[in-house]
Image (cartoon, rainbow, N blue to C red; front, side):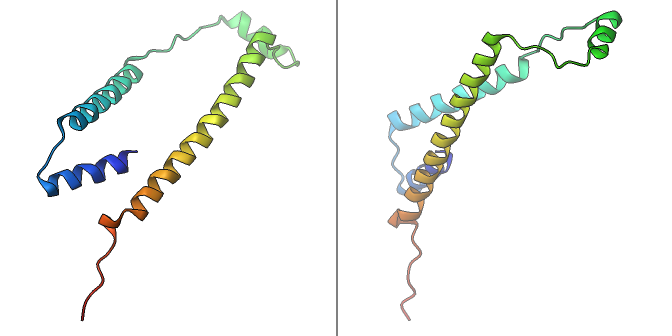
Length: 113
């Protein structure tokens, strides 16, 4: 999507024409991404410190830690949704690439010699 918007921006600069609605939506998109980055930077994860005795008891137990059934269900749901997002992302990138490749504005001109 970003390469498509970059090509659209270049096209508008070459044409000298700008659509205010499109520029406004592009600015809103950029501001939302900046906000998302800022939230990720400001996020401080909570670290649960355990005592020495708890650590020793955890390490002395040879069995793997037991997961709650709710946690297992959430992990499975997360994995299914992650795979779906990866497929959608791949399809969108493929569509973006096809749009850029098939756009006649970006085709190389044949030399007439």
